[in-house]
Amino acid sequence: MDLDILLVVNRIAGRDALLDTLILQVASSPLFKGIPVMMLVWGLWMQPHAAQARRRAALAGTLVMAVLALATGRVLSMTLPYRARPIHDADLPLRLADSVGVDTLNDWSAMPSDHAVLFFALATGIALADRRWGLVALAHAVLVIALPRIALGFHWPSDILVGGALGVAMALIAVPLLRRVLLDTGLLAWLESRPGFSYPLMFLVAHQLGTMFASSRTLLGVLRDVLAG
Image (cartoon, rainbow, N blue to C red; front, top):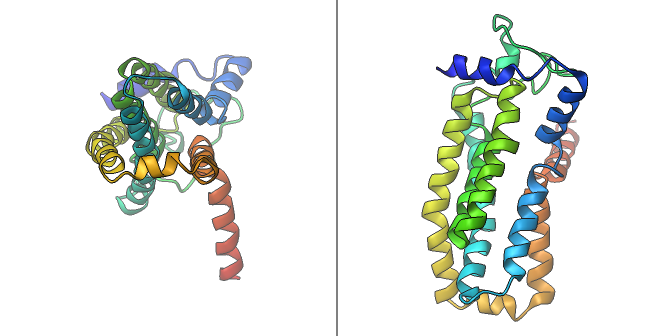
């Protein structure tokens, strides 16, 4: 079933250079991936609501939980047995999109998909704050995050399924707990009373989540090379 689904979704790749470029942009650009979700979080934060404190506590908890979810996904992909991505299996009859080769994402294990962990966790957290917009975030996770990565051969469907399930489970457990802590301890009120501190901090977290910590990973890579040299 894993292979069958992969090959069906992969049919849209390798047919037209313009379509391949579009799929690659959707799969790689933060303008399609993380930034729309962070805009949704900020929009809900600013929107007046009858239970605004409860909603904001859920959204703040979602941001914290998302950082933990992404870190968990990366740790698991580095510690679980290595699983090659479909594009690295020469025996698979895959259509390769233009500019995608066997060296793409080389040496990165496919299981679980850290994209799926993060974006399904975010969608679930948003749903706990607002069910309607949570469904929008879930559709984004499926159509913008999951399907292009399967179509391009970056992940097996089961990589997405496991990553998504992990993200949903973490959000269902952590967000209600963090919401309660933020409300019961008065921490949310404390943060809201200090916008000069809390909003820049939230911007930093939202920026890093929206770009999947790309700048932080680059900096850590440079530091690692410097220390190793």
